[in-house]
Amino acid sequence: MPKLKKQSLLNYVYRFFDIIVLFFIVFDFGYDHADNYTSPHVFGLLTLSLLLLAFNTVKLFIYKYKNNKRVAIVNIAIISILLLSSLVVWLIHSSNDYHFVLQKIKPILELGLVLYFLLRLLVFVRYIYALYFNPAIVFVGSFFILAILGAFLLMLPSATTNGISFTNALFTATSSVCVTGLAVLDTSQDFTIIGQSIILVLIQLGGLGILTFTSFFAFFFRGSSSFKEGLNTKDFIAQEGLKDVFRAALNVVTFTVALELVGMVFIYFSVLDNVVIKDKFFFSVFHSISAFCNAGFSILPSGLFEESIRFNYGFQWIIMMLIIFGGLGHNIIFNFYKKVKISFLELFQKKPYINVCL
Image (cartoon, rainbow, N blue to C red):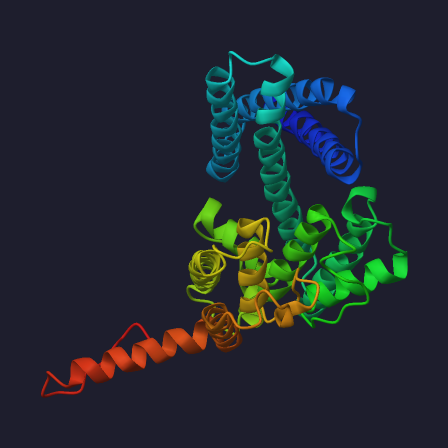
């Protein structure tokens, strides 16, 4: 009984930390701050990161289930790596003023909080659809929640250059989640890099589906999942049976991220000499994900008709291939690969090649 009370108390503390992290992220990214606020701000980030590290360490020793321990270990690993990276950056720039050093470690600490919160959000969504067993409602509800949440995030002051109405924010968020490419504002001019990043995350989650992501993390942390979760995910990723459905979700996420990374690298080198594009890394990430998810969004003022990119045929071929691979999807490409492999092997065998893994 004392053990149960400890775990119950720990869950309340867990939720308290989730709320604190959420408010800190919104406050951090959603609002512009004066320069004289930077140092206390970074000290707050550092304190929160250390508290999260201590809390997850306590969790690791109190929780008795392997699944909970595994989640705690991942959280500890993420926070520890980012804190160590911050320490290395601090040592490298130790000869500079401490305000300068704090500016250098600020993005690292922010990345840690965002990753931590995303993991917690995926665990929460997975808990919700595990409780409510209706795949159709869960499927539609996940898009609705993403669109509403995205609209409120796009209304944060630092997400746009001149503000945005709720209607325009909701339209943009819905278009991003549903990967339609329709826009009522200029994505390149009316949204800051934070707003464009929010749009990019909505495109990625909408293109793959929040259920695929939660299933991926469920399999990653636990190695298996419940029958209910299997039915939900089976319908979403078009699997006939429940066998290996979560491994299939893992394959979909891995396939998507791998192709987007490859596309990002090729896009980066195709625009390396383009002086008009300032942030080439973010440009490459945005257009790779947007093309693969068939979203139709661009951060160029005139889209791909922009004069600086209009005749860059190498870039256009990369975008075209990403659109094709993203449109076909994992299952069709994987089955096509299997068919080619079997046909090739049959050339060297007298008997037909039978692949029992299909």
